[in-house]
Image (cartoon, rainbow, N blue to C red; front, side, top):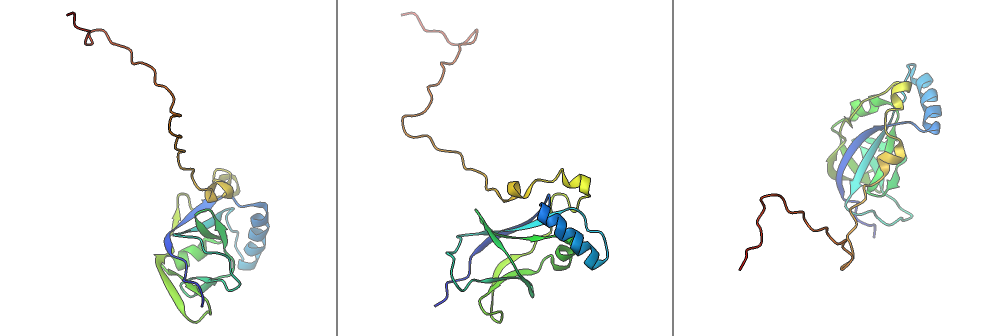
Length: 168
């Protein structure tokens, strides 16, 4: 029996610096589409309630009716990369769906959002975008201190005019 489809909590699109491999792909894609594509990689982060265990029969990811050929795992869920902003413009608002057989689909209840922050950037502007490693890193929760390991507090200084001990 196949496992249940992953539960999607949210999705976001973040503009990031392209990697060296992305730059080569952008050059090839630019000549293929006949226009210069900006030096931007859009990371579509799909936060999952729980990351499923790897299996031999994995779930295919779709945006509307378009199958996403490759997606990867990051600490909070899965992600895929988009190098042409036209894809995001064309598919904005379409549902994210999973399928085991490319015929029956499980709607996640989450739609593809538009990019957050800056849209596409020139080669010079791309250096101002965060690197992909930063985009995919999960913020660390504050570490709780072990019982009894709290740092001693300094005694508060008394101010002039503050309450004084009463004489008995």
